[in-house]
Image (cartoon, rainbow, N blue to C red):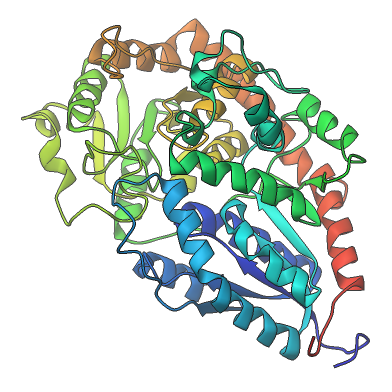
Length: 480
């Protein structure tokens, strides 16, 4: 097939496991296909896949296809290994299969680009080998990207654990970060997860460009600093293309039930509580959170999962059994809060909940997808980070942007947020002066997010269109 063929340009997309990775890449791919005339193939893992992933992929519009990689051996990986460690091992063992898929696509389509997320860097040599432009969708902030780009140098310059640094880490254009607020896998430099992050930090310098799911007006100084550094050798071009969020409806009986409940609540009166698709609390923390929500006297909608006393990402790889999460709530809690609160096991249609007029606040783990969704809908935040880059995000939300309140953990070193603190911060966000200021800032961010993706003139729309044109001009086909 010659370059001038009428066949549309094609993109191969590889997300690492987890709906939190699949959704932003699929939403971006929809823009490739529906707005810019591409076709796309997803390369997905069979390990840890479930009905939700299959149903999601099957629901994608015309122009999409997907390939499921063969199962990968993971029996030697401890169940309590960090998320980053498990992801890196899976991707490394997938490389031969990815090579086969990309070879086939290069032979049968006008392959314009290979787009990965942060944890799929071990597959980049395959794209280079096949002469395919390779890009990274960075699914968090410019500040975290800056941190990763600086990590190899920081590693060389630091001898102690980062949490023991006497001074904050200061990156160009970014808010100062205490060592304890750096990425979760950076908290133990002897752990495999830290070595994985170092490898990722080196790999991301190998891509042809980085598409960042953020927008210029959200992080203007961090964005400007990254752009100024682009002439440096090994610094890929950075493109602000966000906010890219899931905007469709998941539907289903459970979703309709919680939306009907919200319809019955006063405007701005409900605190939405959710820790994402992978986050889990300890057994004791679930009890404290429940009693705090009850004591706050405020309306709430809580998506509850079974606890994990081992890792805060216990639901990420579906490591929990078929247990009933409601049985971990305090005795009589559901009866005492009936009417004022709604507890839903496992899942609700989060975008529709955040868009609902009754939702006035969001207690969140600070995953970047959830934060972008809160910006788009102008909802202020209670920042409750659990793992990955979420502590860094929480600092940005509370200390940097002023759109979030941050509950204090207990002075006894347990790491728990006690019920009294839960009640106080819930009341403050929903009705206090600090909550009012956070709500005003959330409104400003809503407007800025809308402008970034407004038609052809939005800054993010322009940036994406430029990348798409480059891909169209450089699509390849045939044997290597």
